[in-house]
Image (spheres, one colour):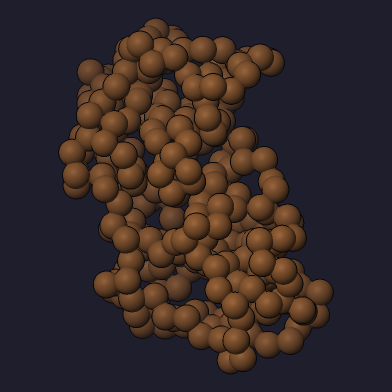
Length: 263
């Protein structure tokens, strides 16, 4: 039996995010973050004393509309890194500093700029970076957020549980191809609102007896038994326990909403 996971892009799972207090070496002040939108915002915050070095990053803080949350500033912190997204539209506030996050559980990563982001529930995201100022306060506004090119629903039209892998290019992390899975989708259910900033997605699906239901010519490295995230899965060395190449089907994506059906 496969070990599966789901991602936070599935709105029904967002409620699992915990309230966090950043582990710090000494409290100096509070960093204030305010949600000026009409949706819940989920925030991940990094801090460092040198830009792009020894970054401690943690998440997630849930900020409800028209409210603010405070995060403890670390001693000697001079730079702050932020990544946040809206819970329904999946709009985001991001940047160029790639750091490893966990999109299923609360997390606290040390030296996140160096962390290997291949693993269950680990996902690289591009954080905005700025210098810390006294009485730091940041407001998340709808018109400042970037909407994903595509939102993808993957729907199981069958009468059995199916297991799905999905891959797509990530322009925000240097154009790397990221593949993830396995997701379990119950009969007649959908995995909804997955944000994809690419015009093509690659999908593979199996039935409950491991029968291939959706496959194709795009060969990518997968873990055949366990949930995984792979960065550069097309070129990575595909050797090790349960690893192997499998063929994914190309699915063109339109801008906006897309539905991929497993029949």
